[in-house]
Image 1 (cartoon, rainbow, N blue to C red):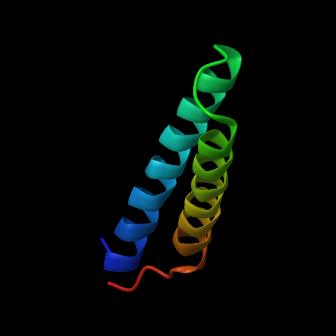
Image 2 (cartoon, rainbow, N blue to C red; image 1 turned 180 degrees about the vertical axis):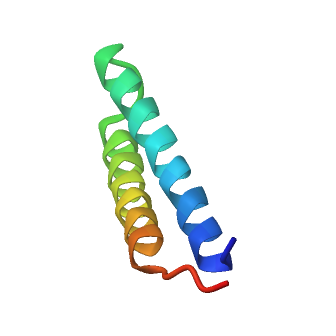
Length: 61
C-alpha cells in the first residue's frame, strides 16, 4: 500500500472521529462553542484532505 494512500486513510478516519465527536457534543449541549467550531473545522479539513489523497493517489505496483 502506498504511503500517501495510508496517510489519506488515517486523515479520513481522524476526520470522521472528529465530526462524530463534534456532533455528539452539539446534541448534548456540552463544550464551549468556540471549541466545537474549531474541532469541527479541523475535522472537515482532515476528512476532505484524506479523501482527496486516497482518490488522487494511483496504485503503482
